[in-house]
Image 1 (cartoon, rainbow, N blue to C red):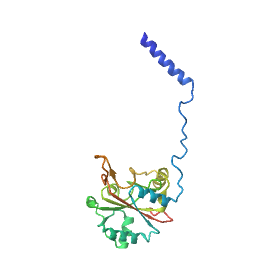
Image 2 (image 1 turned 90 degrees about the vertical axis):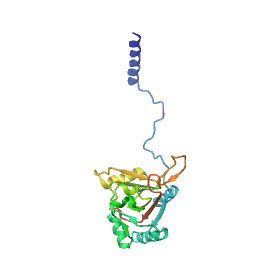
Image 3 (image 1 turned 60 degrees about the horizontal axis):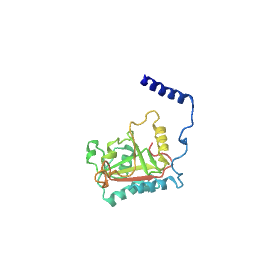
Image 4 (image 1 turned 45 degrees about the vertical axis):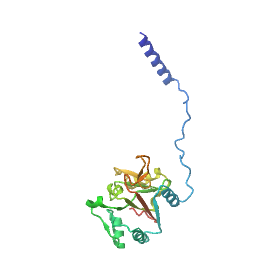
Length: 218
């Protein structure tokens, strides 16, 4: 009898709570307002500063024509070995510039430097958005110890929300099965609180930003 009475009391409280609407005990959040402060600098400057802050490397190119020469200078200066490239768009640029590259997918595990394009560049965080729809696929993003990303100024967006809008506009209903955001080189401090670079992916990240008026990734 006591159990039945207790049950009825609980159910009565629930019924009353559903009937009598009370003000919430916490303030109602404004979900439409921006969480982050407004970006005041240009997107390219904001992106460069954020990328450098997370140990990435930033290289600016005034045009697509300038890019091969800048890349070739980097290869000579840093004594980089053979680039690994699976993207036909980038392969054509490298081929015309006389920059040798490896394109055999079977040799990807031997690659030290992988070069890819990206889906978007997120200025606030200095992040690079990539997806499984890019020609290289997934392995080249994590396998080589150095990742070279080629992006265009038309791919610069302020925040993650705009990056998703950009990629959704590009693919429509054929949305990629994998979308990932890269923020600086791979790192971890899980083992004895010691920071280790390149633990789960590239230990160096270079972003070559090319100024363009039409999206160069099309």
